Image (cartoon, rainbow, N blue to C red; front, side, top):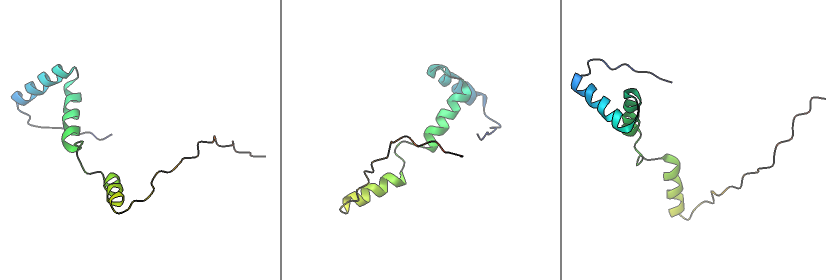
Length: 79
């Protein structure tokens, strides 16, 4: 897991983050992580796989419905 240090954060910003964290029932650190996740990875971001499926679906389609074999694997034999 990566870690960052934020220097020179104003007292006002720190107080606002603490207050926001308290409203959401989490630590200030968890609140900052949530804010960064929301900004860096918005839900409406382009997802390449989904975009490709939509492109091919519009062009006549490709059957991407793959049935997965759910048969339990046989244990290895070392005899």
